[in-house]
Length: 506
Image 1 (cartoon, one colour):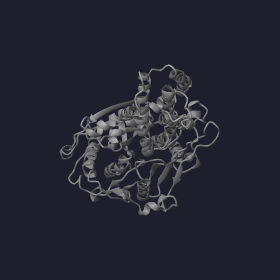
Image 2 (cartoon, helix red, strand yellow; image 1 turned 180 degrees about the horizontal axis):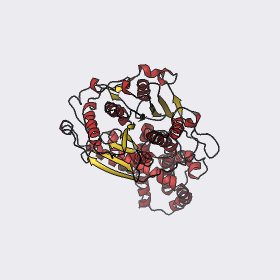
Image 3 (cartoon, helix red, strand yellow; image 1 turned 90 degrees about the vertical axis):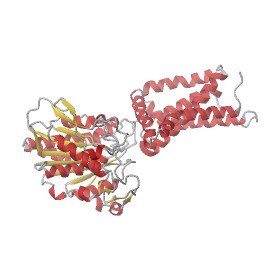
Image 4 (cartoon, helix red, strand yellow; image 1 turned 180 degrees about the vertical axis):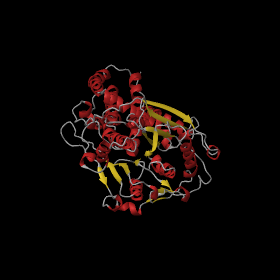
């Protein structure tokens, strides 16, 4: 059997390339936007990366054997076998193309081993097809095939090189933060709340399988007074599983946690004609109004679910991304009900806009004297502009600390501060140092405040305010310090963020 012509080889490569894009193409044809179409592949990339991290020694040993065996196989491989590997080459190039787009938009070079693996697969495939590269200028016969073969091999080597030391276990490793486990087991129950008809009537079908609920997490066998934490999720991600680690970290230390699900997919009047404007930390989305109605209904329902030993005067309100913007709604509702009057912590993580509508404005004059806030942004956040957090700090005043979690690519795994640092799926060493360490201090400060333990309250307060200890992020295994947290007490008037005063989007 003879190898196919150049045209058919090109078609086989293109066919493999299309096969790699088949899933997002189908999802796009079914009506998903680009984000939704590529989300399953992004999620799998994360899963594959964690698998490669956990098994990199075995994977490296496999490829050390696979590369020479692929060359040996090239001597006896049938044309049919080689044709299959031609298609496979196109498939890997397709996966690599998708990865490159996602890396540019989201990953920011965090996923080092996945392109390295693609490089090894391309190299093995190229060796099976044509063996060792030949000089294409020695003879004119097969020149195009030889040049194409060299290009694929060079691409493979280029992909392999950056991750070779990491896959081999030779790169410095990041510091492990030994967070002491919480004292209590956590009981979690969900309660569907009555969605107002004016909201349910305009909901889309993206979240049709979601039973919008309030999740209540309670530390078991805890009879003392408990503070309360209210937590709101990010855009289009109401799933409790994405915030389990955050909730359990708080509840296991004696904090009652209410996780509020609210609908993202709503279609109010004007949703398809308005022109987006973002300014002063706010946006003019018409979606804010029905979501605010749903959040208010959930909060009213939540108030009926809390155990008797929950003292709402000791309160934390927290949110991620869009949920951070909506934390102002939850906080305003709480302060109007005199919650948080004794101790109040506000945690805005990777915050997006709060509503611009007049009736949804936050009354900052209600903030109590005993108030602290963290507004955390990530250096490589490709989803939310940093200026939203800067404006939120400016609104909240002197007791709000702006924190930037930096990226540090010195070793492996690379510590890349993305928009998803707070999500359970992205819980890594950087998340422990840059996020969960603060969560522990926040919980302990609230609990000690509720128990009138002034010694512990003072200790945990020092863990939350700006200091070298707060900023310290540990050391790589070779002794180099990890990039420290960057903090600002008045970011709007700093050189770093002064541009945010006049920033408008999108």
